[in-house]
Image (cartoon, rainbow, N blue to C red; front, side, top):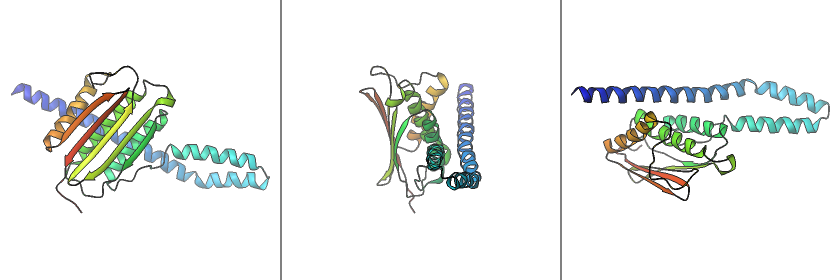
Length: 218
């Protein structure tokens, strides 16, 4: 009984820590977006000055700089589910900062029955582990593919990432017990909803597939 209470307390503490981390990441992304929008008029004025002087090269350089800056803060995925959008886009922003190329295709045109907390833990941990795995490689070889859609009454999530080293038998993160607990929590959540999770390692790439039954649709 005491052991069970300790486990529940540990899990609750871990979930709270994860949520605070995700909220901070999302807020950081939105802060960047608000800052860019606030500076929009200033950018226009700067380019007008260059245009008045006939400095076309300076305008081109300035536009390239703005394009790179905007790429790092814009919302790149709109799944139809606000919480999923927030978590995914904050993680994609982190991936971009780490020079990780991401191919994402996600659409969830239904009201999910899985709680926002549980969905955040699944997506957040999957992306954290994928980003960590990619960092073992040089920038040109870092790649994450994430795919989400409804398959009948199931939410399907598939994520694959490149990683350095030989084929590994363990999917546990190198960063210690907390991250190992993250994988365990994914398994626990999938089991709670009567879903399925599979993991595979092949050709220096790691993949995870998750199926979660969903009863309610809009």
